[in-house]
Image (tube, rainbow, N blue to C red; front, side, top):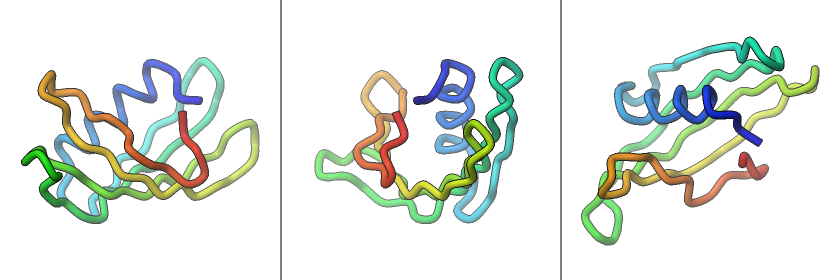
Length: 88
């Protein structure tokens, strides 16, 4: 489950990072850490920008790698379409 600060950082990485550029942060409330790397940018079925990404996460002391896809909605927020394992 992503907290608000984590969702904000994920959105910023998807919006601003170049492909293969990593953004890392640690959540001060729960000490979980994340490193998000967009790996591919493409156009979705409705013409919206979409990105595949990889997240290296340490949650409750357990490291995991998450693979996901998100597209930018008309409101400007990145919406997670898929993540394995499930991110939200």
